[in-house]
Image 1 (cartoon, one colour):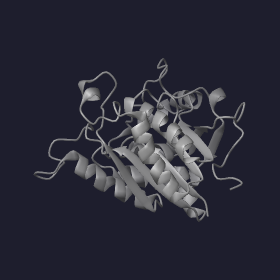
Image 2: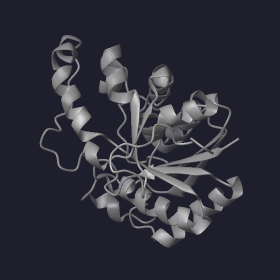
Image 3: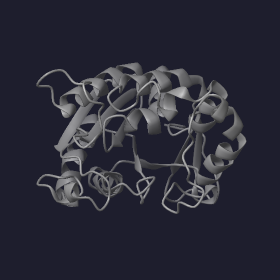
Length: 264
C-alpha cells in the first residue's frame, strides 16, 4: 500500500484539482491523506445560506469532510492558517494569513504529517499556484520545502494545461452557450496554468469524473448548482476535468507519466 498526501490551499480546491487522483488511489487500495492550509474564510457565500450564528469557515470545514469522504480520503488535516484572499487585497496582510506565514514554519508542520504517514507521494501546486492566487503560490513553496524536510520521494506539482483548456473553451463554446454556461475568458491570461510543453504527467481520471462532480457539489457554499463546474455538459466536464496534470522535477521533456503511483 502506498500513501499519498494531497496538499491544498482552501476547501474545494482538492475536489477541483486532485479529486480524480485521490479517488483513483483509494480505488486501487492506497491510503489517501488530505491537508488543507486554510479554512477558506475569505470565500464568498450567498446571503441567507449560512445558519444564524454560523461562520463561513465552519461550513467550509464541514463541506471538506463530506467531499473528502466521497474522494476516499482516510485522514483530513487543516494547518489552521487564515485565508489570504486574492492577490493584492488587504486580507493578504491579516495576522495569521497563509501568504505571510514563514515558509520554514509551515513546511515543518506539513513535514510532521508527511513523516507520520511515511508518505510516498505528495501533490502540491506549480510555482504560480495554477492561476496566481497567493495561497496557492504558498502551497507550492511550503509543499516543496516540506518534502525536502521529510525526504518525500515523489512530489508532483498540480497544474492546469493551458493549451488544452483554451482549445476546450473554443471547442465547447456553442454547447456551453446552449446550456447557459458562461465559460471563463483565459485566452490572454498569462497567469493561467502552464503550457503543455512544461507538463510531465497527465493522469486520466475520467472514470472518476462523477466522484469529482459529487465532491464539488459537497462544497455548496462555494459551488452552487448554477456554477460553471456543475452546469457544464457531461462531455465538456470530462474534457476539462477528466485529466489531471502535474509537473515532476527531473521528468520529461514532455509528458512521460500517466500514474502518480506507478512503480511504488
